Image 1 (cartoon, rainbow, N blue to C red):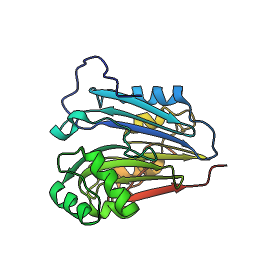
Image 2 (image 1 turned 90 degrees about the vertical axis):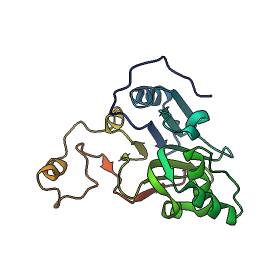
Image 3 (image 1 turned 30 degrees about the horizontal axis):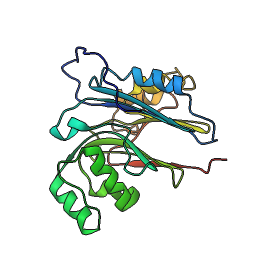
Length: 231
């Protein structure tokens, strides 16, 4: 399905990011479209310009778009160039000309005026997981690679953009918004004592803790692979 623009609404002045969410059932069960739709709707305050949900078997991706650049004028997520590798992101790519030139030198032809999400996907298709080493800017993204049955999530080097995930048995849930992850019924409502301690002693507790038990935060300048053959 294409991007559907929700009705006009007031956007809090502090909002500066799109929203995304994903559910991957690594045991092969179909992702629940109703649950994914509900989780995506709770992100509409982040992205009032468009809202899209895509479910394909065991993988569901949702995105709400806030257009903040000229390149995002025609952007629609989840995005794919070949139908096999899909991405959702909240991203601003810097040094676009340098990135495009590096891609072109390796046979990947694109343009500086393409949406940020498209440049990131080309980088992944060219360099794989080490694509983050070639990206500058503020970003959090998730890529589902159907060829490899692999979910790859990453966050920018300074940790400007958040990325939360929960591994719930064979289910992986992720979003750039903690409240969205909490919408999944398997996510615990208990508070994380380590995260509370982190507020009082930030140099002692790992930066990957969140306030919810079972929900983790991707560290700055870090990424995470989830790969398991579906039966």
